[in-house]
Image 1 (cartoon, rainbow, N blue to C red):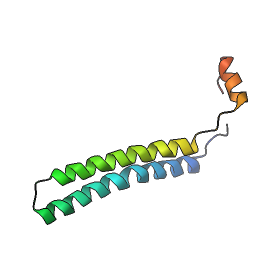
Image 2 (image 1 turned 90 degrees about the vertical axis):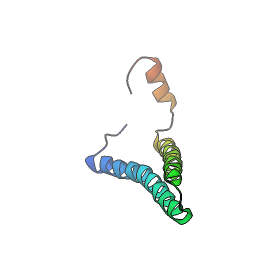
Image 3 (image 1 turned 180 degrees about the vertical axis):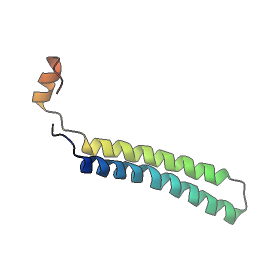
Image 4 (image 1 turned 60 degrees about the vertical axis):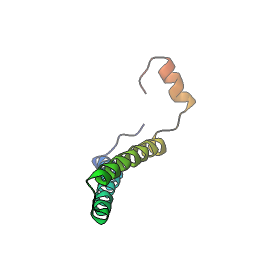
Length: 85
């Protein structure tokens, strides 16, 4: 597997930050707006933040699945032999 450069690591950091930050912040802001419109306590803020967290977790799982290396018979043989790939 190729070594990641510092630019690649920064790209990954930016992607993960956006995947986590936008849904959580968006859910909280939507909750604030709904609470002000309905003149309620911060129940929608908590609900929006929780929904944002669930969306962020799903987003990270999808990101990992999309960028994980594909399994190969060569890697499986190395792992079975006890060698680190």
